[in-house]
Length: 610
Image 1 (spheres, rainbow, N blue to C red):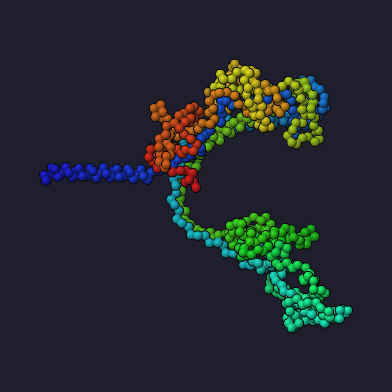
Image 2 (cartoon, rainbow, N blue to C red; image 1 turned 90 degrees about the horizontal axis):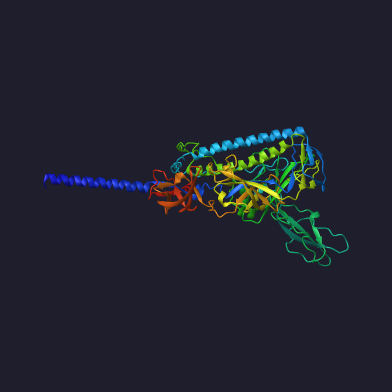
């Protein structure tokens, strides 16, 4: 082969090997790289403020209600139940000193809520401009730790001078009880007219006289039985002639009364503990007692003693347990400890094992992951809506108190009849009104409508309302709509867009018995406008633009796939409405990650957490 040809072959071979190596590395990297995906349901920030919903309040109620306020002292009541009153008539008066104090307190509450709203708005804007931090890098699998060893059980304790045990570990700690018994029978000569005498010696001393089979009663013969007991501590009772019992006929039941052996419900094993013991395991029953006796139908009773007012010991509490059922209905270790007093369980204690822990990588403690940021934005929007409602209520209460500062008198707002007057010495405690005046003029509510809905609402239309106070629903008819926008932004009652204007309206409620003046309502404007409340709302960090199209990176059977979606509104400059192409059950990745490309393997963040 010529040198030049040989050289060309070598160069070609080297290039082929190099290209093969590069391709191999790329295939390997693609197979090892992964990207975390999160459920759309967890990333969906929601759309708290729909243009078809608003808030309103009762501006002219059919019923004037005055509620008892402990911070204001009532000095006089001018009316009685059933009395006819006219608009402007005095109903009751307050002490001006306490009234001024109440106004000052309500003014502080308004200012406090306004400051909270300002702070929450600042925090929301900060969240909307926050870039999420990467998910923490998974720590390497820890080395398998040795199985922990249970702390050794304590020894069986000695009873104190009162017979109390600090804790229970063994059946041997139970009070003396009947473990078993045997009946012996004997007969002596008798003329049936004189007093008979039992045998002087028992079956252990004179076995020829006694037998275990019942002796039939006959004329001229006195028949006796005596019961030999074996107790739980192994001891037995000695024969005493006074314990022998004569039976006078063959039908007489023997023994005369039923003998309940230890461990039955009528005669359980009894354990005595002291509530005032200084032992660390005071009042504790160890699981060992139940496990050692778990195959037997035995009852245990634990009596806890304490001293009474006369400085005498008495049972303060008892716990009756059937051993086999108690042991079989739960997971139990010998070292598990059960409190006799509270019946609560403390798990088995284990010896501490020192294990070297690898240092976790440093993560910005103030940063938010993608899922955490979405949740924080959603929670902050909801907090702002709640604060806005609190501010409205506080301002209404403040204005009502200020109106009375001149003379402290509350006056009738319309003609009507006094329906209720409370007792100052015993005011209502259930939240009901202290004084009520029922009129007959109907009820009006005031609300606002977004300019996005203005062309779809007209006088005579009906709207629905929900009372946050009573939980009742109402239907109202639009009476008039303002032609100029309301002052102030008020964007928490609309689409969430601070550039949208709002117009006030007034609606009439015919059936208004359940409404109170100043009561706040959730209003729904009955229109055919598209409902956006069921859409998916995602941070722009999860959506990319391709020309005039938008797409996300979606998990598809363990690999990343580009999924085109149909979008709607963009609000807050950060949140995009996804109208089609994605569901709450899908999983998507952070769209601007370096690994965000089709074909990359995915890992589920929720499964990783498990």
